[in-house]
Amino acid sequence: IILSIFYVTYRVIFRNVANFNQLRIYLLVSILVSVLVPLLNISVNIDFFSAPKTQIPLPFQELTTTANIPSINTPVEQSIDWNQTIKSIYYVVSTILIIRILIVTLALVFRFYKSERVKLGNYTLISTNKQNTFSFFNWIFINKQNSTNEEFQQIVLHEKIHASQYHSIDLILIELLAAVMWFNPLVWMMKKSIQLVHEYLADEGALSTGIDRLRYQA
Image (cartoon, rainbow, N blue to C red; front, side, top):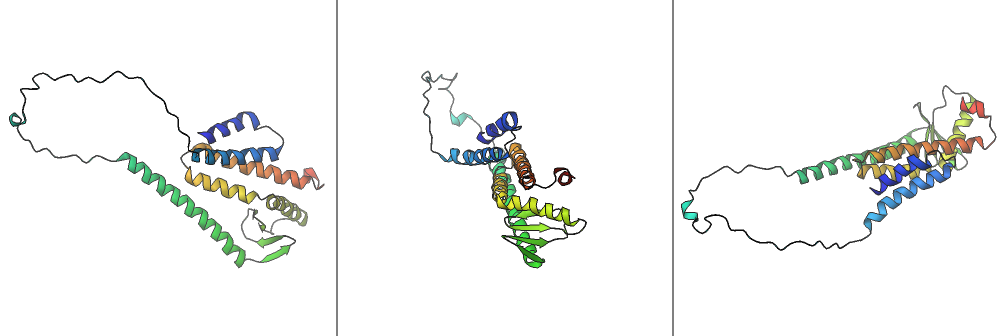
């Protein structure tokens, strides 16, 4: 509920704010508050006034005895424990999502050691045959093919901003949150919003270095 309130507020009020650092901080604080507040032990005692309970005797209650009731063997129907079923579904899906995060992380580590690597200051460029370029902390996975030298430099600059601002930490947090709150659609919407803010920040940081805006947009 807390996370939903924060995100609806973001969509209604803060979505069009041009300060992307503020948007990032707001979204991260929303995650932390929504996780920490439910851990607080807050209880509220509410007293309800209720009328005293009275027993109303049934007709012929005193005349009815168990001896007069014939014994009938009826089969007992097995009822489904929906509470336990829902819990089981929740834990299964959460476990699958957490395992997926571990597999993706291990795959990145495996690709790091199996690919050609070039040290570039505090960053490491890893050659990949994948079309998309991305960064994981100080690792920059990039496809050098089908791009000019200027485009290559601009892409690397873009990914350096991601790495220098530690966007990977944000993504790990939101991935873990989505794994335990997968039933809330607003969590997945918040994940997309955080990724979008990251792209705005990376573009803003790249353009601040003085490169041509129109060529960069192209």
